[in-house]
Each structure stands twice: as C-alpha cells, then as structure tokens.
Length: 451
Image (cartoon, rainbow, N blue to C red):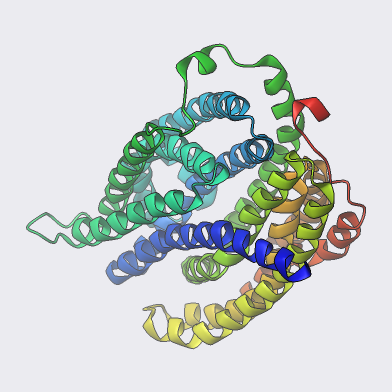
C-alpha cells in the first residue's frame, strides 16, 4: 500500500512538476539568450536591457500573484470536480490582469525615460533601456493574457500542453533574437530594439495558441458573460486569499528591485556581473520553482477533494524534495561558474565580481528552493498566504534592504560585501518558515461549501 502511494505521488510529480519546471527553464532561457547575444555587441547593451527588464520583473510580480491566486481556487475546484466555478474564476482573473497589463503597456510606450531613471544614472544605460522599453511595451499586455491562459491549463490537467506552448514560444523568441539583433536573413542589425521586437512577436504567437487550445472541446472556456457579470461570492473569496499574495509579491518584488537599484549605482561592472549571475541563477533554479508551483497544484487538488491527510502527506514529501533540490542546484551553479567566466566577455573587475557572486548564490539556492516550495506552493494551496507577506516584509524591509543601502551608500563597502548582504533574505527566513509549516494552517479546503 505504501509503495502504491509513493508511486501515485511520483506520477503526479512527473506530470505536473517536470513540465512546469521545463517551462520555467525555457522562459529563463530567453533572458540568457538576450544577455549572450547583446553581450556580444557591448557590455553596456547587456547592462541596459538588464535594468530595463526590471519593469518586466515588476509586472511579472503582479502576474505571479494573480496566477497564484487563480491556482488556489482552480486547483481546489478542479479537484472537487466543479468546472463551472473554474470558468468563473478564470474569467475574473483574466479581466483584472488584462487591465493592469494594459497600464504597463502604456508606461513602457510613453514614459520609458522616467522608468529608466529609477534604476540608473548612467546616460548610456538610460538610452539603451529607453529603446528597449518602448519597443517591448506591447509584450507587457500580451504576457498578461498568456500567463493566465497557461495557468488555467496547468491547473486543469494540461500542464504538458502549457509547457509545449510556452517552450515553442521561447524557441521562436531565441531564433528571432538572433535574426533581429545581428541583422541576419538580409534584415538590418537592430541590436537592443531587435531583442524587444522578438519578444513581442513570440508573445503574440503564445496568446494565439492559447486561445486556439482553450477553444477545443472539453477545455475550460473564457466566457465574456463571466467577465462582465462576475460571481460576487467567488470574487470576494479570491481577494480574501489573494490580497496577501499580492502584498507579498509587491513587498518582495519591490525589495528585490531595490537590490537592482543598489547594484545599478555601483558602476557598470557591478551591473554586468549581477546581470549574468541572475540569469544563470534563474536557469538553475527552474526545478525549484517548478517544484513549488506544481507541488502547490498537487496539494490544492487533494485539499479541494477533501483528502486533507493526503495533502499533508504530500506537503511533507515536497519539503524534503525541496531541500535536496536546493543542494543540487547550488552544486550545479558552482560547476557552471568556470564555464560562464570563460565565455563571458566582461572586464577583469566584472569577472572578479562574478566569480564571488556565483559562490554566494550556490548557498542561496537551498533557501530559495525551500521557500519557493513552502511559501509559494504549499502554503498558498490552502489559502495560507498571509505568512509570506509578513515574512518578506520583515526580512526585506526591516533587514536586507536598509542594510544594503547603508553598506553601499553610507559605509561604501566593497561590491561583493554589498551583494552578500542583499542576498541573505532567503536564508534568514528558513527558521520561521519551518516553524510555520509545522502549524499546518495551510491544510484547509477553500471551496465555497467549506469556507
């Protein structure tokens, strides 16, 4: 019986976590290709796009909060077998997300200079970032739409299809990157603008494919009637549990953006090294993120179906896997560092920064993996979202962000010491996360009959 339960868990893990992890990897690969190709032009091109991409990062925080909230309810109602409720929550989240994504489109199109001044005072970086933001602005709207579609596919038994759509979009993006950036196939060399245009086209293909996929028989449909006349009870339930998630993402995301602001004012070498290590970190951490996202869906399905003991059992297994995943990811980063240092065309000073940043990030991975699985996955699966908001508020805004500013601008510590300080947050959280996990407040059915 025990072997059967273990086999069932592994089967769900394979069908959910690995497709989602692969999807995360492919998304991170776009940033890696942008960095590699733009880095072949100039170090400033790489740094400018890295800073401009912080606007994308901020939008992604909102999208992540919305898709986590959507997953809370879609996973539980799907586990319960209530397809109509899934369609109602899908329509409502799409409406909210489309409105906010449109606002990001307007900001990128009309005030790119203002946005870039937040992140740097280097004129060369500001100019490159302005070009990128204005060209990529339409992708902000398209991404908001596609991410909600992909989320609903993952939560309704179509995780592999979601991964295929996202991955093909990434491959198209990378190919178009090369064509537009370097001017292949007889086209003019577009540089930074080419990277942005490739992103817009890829996101357009992704949205079109998602619409066609959900138009098939027996798929969850996006109904205009549900968007116009949303379910008031379900809307109230959604914001009750999603507001803390949104607050958490804003608190964490703005804090993380402050790290980029700090590094962005420490010179182009610090920006370039930070850009590279973040890209590699995101690539290596993909299975950690997949474990959190897929694990949250697994736990949510069991909670919605009323199998609370099984959800608790799955949570324990996922936590143990997250520790192993973090250790392995850290080791991989250490092994990759000599190769990355060899192929990157950075200054000697930037290479020195990069070497030590890799060492620090290899330790950071353990905390990131555990926190992504618990705070971002298991806790949210049962609506226990308030803890993450409080945890990040304390660790970021009472500790690492103010200490980072003091270290950089008051005490003027070396770049590596500043980087170490601003990357302590994930490790600081671990004792509080473990203690909260053991309270089992996340073992809860959120469907309307059980609220």
